[in-house]
Image 1 (spheres, rainbow, N blue to C red):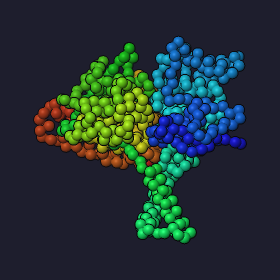
Image 2: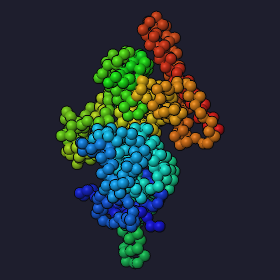
Image 3: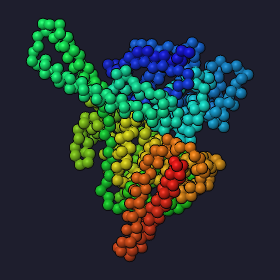
Length: 599
């Protein structure tokens, strides 16, 4: 059977800047392709070319006869006055579905996408539910291939799991632009990286994302060896050319042509191999005290609804909290409490004196009238970073911006570029506490890797809200799970919280097991560890060592004679000791679970 989509030697440029050149890509029955690549490589453009929304500058895209192609853009917006039923009815009409079949199809679509209230106003839905509605519209078409551009950006963790299940059971092919590594691992059966480092403009690997990483590393190593070998041969030929050979014989002329060909090939390889990465390194303050914020029996109610109650938590330097829960469970509200924007309904929040907090908002609020130059350096042509002055052009280059972009308006930047601008601004502010609300949206995988390393090295405390499960597992020393109905429970990792979710009767159960009783969960399966569990297992020993060090430090503080005679200091030290002991108990319990499951 011919491919559903067949793109041959297509190229696309914006102005003088080429996005991709002469690339070829086919989409066949059963393909679930994860399309990745650095920001600016042209992933979204390629997807819209495959969808027929844009035309390539050269080459062609052939669609199999009678094949249906559905496309879901990054952002989904609906005009006022339309409810969910209206949107789906319109899609059914446009897809020429018989009117007497509409009600049955509506019920089926609502069931598949989780919509209970079809009268809800589409424009008032959260970003995650608007994404679900856009996917429901696409499914109306009964597509042969579904093209999804960053579908997980606006979905919460429950929504991502829903989408994974939907795609795994789907009878259609998919091409998905995503930077969510666990999502790619769970859904994709092929990975395509669009990147100019490859001679064909892309690398396609059959298998899961973990297999792609292995194959990509093998390619990079082989390419590096070939590049070095060619470099050595070019040196020899350049020395020969410098001696001024005469092109009087066919043999000499052929060698001169070959030498120039090798020089051009090496220049091309060097050009393609030049990879720039964003330089991310958050500044810590000079604070010596470790205890930053203490929550004591904190409760919060909004509109008569209890989001969480009796929350006790101590934030100390080195604490890295992954804050999880469904949309509306209170994550952003808790961040606002920590910032001091609002007060708790009951309980107390104690902050260290002169606490410095840096906040990354998921709204990415930047004055769109600013140029990139002013957004990066508001007060002149230089910034002060870690005590030294850096010119704005150098500061921009650190975040992968060119000098030509400095006078470009901020509103012309992509989502990933706007995220890098915000990170650049935040890095100029020394912090005791980082509050990061969905910082990973639109960031490419290399930038995510660098962000992770920076957060791991940050000596202060941080609270991370993200749907990136890989980042949660790698960064968090503890996970705080909110269910939106009053419960706030601590877990050793995102994976453990997810296990509890799966074992609970409903995802919104108001009673969660304590973290140190997580071993009571059903772990009798003899199958090998999942990819997510294997990643957790690979880092848990290091996390236990870190937790042990915090416990030892907490014991030393309690036993310090100067602390023992100060009632307030002793109370704080005992609270830190209790938190450290709880964390280590939880980690050991999880370690035992994973060890048993791994056999």
